[in-house]
Length: 138
Length: 395
Image (tube, rainbow over all chains, first blue to last red; front, side):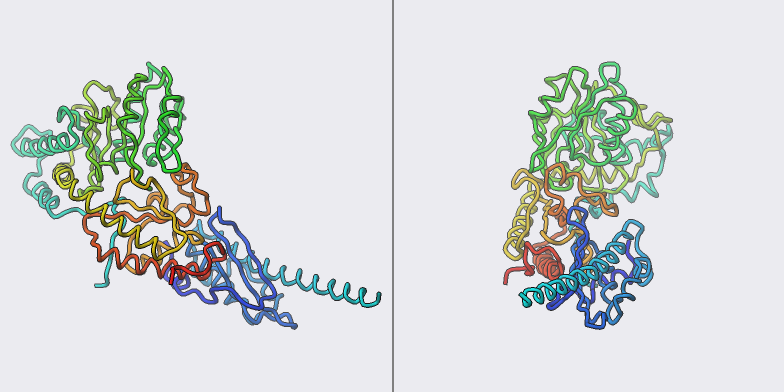
C-alpha cells in the first residue's frame, strides 16, 4: 500500500512530539474523520522558523506527511513556509495512495493554521501593549 | 529468520498438512471430472461423495444431499439470499438481516432492494447482539427470509442462533445463517439450532481457499445462481473442484473433532492476552461481548491512537493483525460493525483485531504484548489527543 519512503518516514518520524516555547500552534482535522494534526512552530523576530515539531493522531500517511512538513519549514521564513504545497510533500514521499492524498492536504493546512496562530498571538500581544500603554496614561 | 506471529486467523488460516495430503492425489492421480461416466470420473465422484458426507456429518445435516459445494462463503451467502428471496417472491418480497453482517450478505440485500424487495435491518446492542424483540417486531406476513450471522467476524460476538431461528419460524419465514466464523469456534448442529440454510467456508478452518458450502434443508426452494451444468443436483453449475472439496471435507472433520480442545486453548490464550494488555496498557477497551464471544477473536480499541498505525508498526515487528475487518482495510470507511454497536468514532479509530489460531503459543502472546506496549507508547508519545496522557504503559 505504502512505498518504502513513506514507511521509513512513518517508522522514524522526525520532530515528533510537543514543543515548549512555541509561538505558533495549529491543529486541524478531527477524531471522527480519523486524523488530527498539530504543528508547533518557534518563530524568531525576523520571522524565520527556528524550530518545528508535530503531534499526529492518524494513519501512517498522516504521520509521514506531518513529519515532512516540519522538516520542510525549519530555517524558512514565514513567507517561504506559506509557499509549501501539499503536492511538494507528496513528491518528497515518492507518492501516496490516492485515498491518502488528503493527509498531505491536512499537513499543509496544519502548517498554515500554525502560522495564522502566530499572527493572532502577535496581534493580541500588540493590542495588549497598546492597552497597557493606554492604562499607563490613565 | 526473524520471528513472525500470525494473529489474523479470522481473515484466513494456513492449510494444515493433513489437508494438503488429502488434496495432493486429486491433482495428479484422481483428476477425473466428477460428472464423467468413466472410471476416472467415478473415482472423482467418490471423493466428492465422501467429502459431502463429512461436511454433512460435521454440521449434523439430516442428509448429505443437503450440502451444496460453492466457490466459498461469499458465493454461498450470495446464492442463499438471492436464490431463496427469488424462489419465494410470490409469497412476499420482504427480507430481513442485521446491521453487522458480512459484506457478502449486505451487498446481496442491497442488490435485492434495487430489484424491488423491501429490506429491514435489525439493530444490535452495544455488545453486538441482535435484538430479538426488534426482530420479532420487523417480521411481517410478507417476510420470506431472515439472514443473521452466527458469530461476527470482527468482534466475535455469538448470536442467540436457536432463539432467532424459533422467532423466524413462528412467523413462517426461512432462516439463513452465515456460519463462516461460527464453524471455527462452536458446534454447529443445524437440526438442533433449527437452521434452514447455512454458509460455511474451508479457509477459516485450515482448509483451502476458494471452496465453501451451502447447507440447504430438504424442502427449501432455491433459485440457482450459477447456471450451465448438471452439477450439485442441477443447483450449481461448474466443474466440481475435487481437490478443494476433498481438503474441505478433511478440514471440517478435524475442526469438529478438535473443537473442545481448541476452544479451551483459545480461551486460555486470549484470556491471558487480554489480562496482560489490560495490565500493561492504559485506556484500552475490549469490544464485543465479554463472554458470549468467539474466544479466538479479541477486538481492542486503543484510545488516542489510530488502528492502521498500530497495525503497520506491529507488522514491522513480524506480527500480523487487522484493523476491524480485514475486508474493510484499504478503504477509509469506518467499521460499520463498531458503528452499529454505537462505539464512538474516535474510539473505533483505534481498533485492532487479534485473532488467535492453532499455531499460536503462550510465548507468542508474550512477544506480542511486549511489542504492543512499545508500539502503543510510541504512537501515544506524539498523539495530540491528551486524554490518555503521554504514557503508553504503566511503569
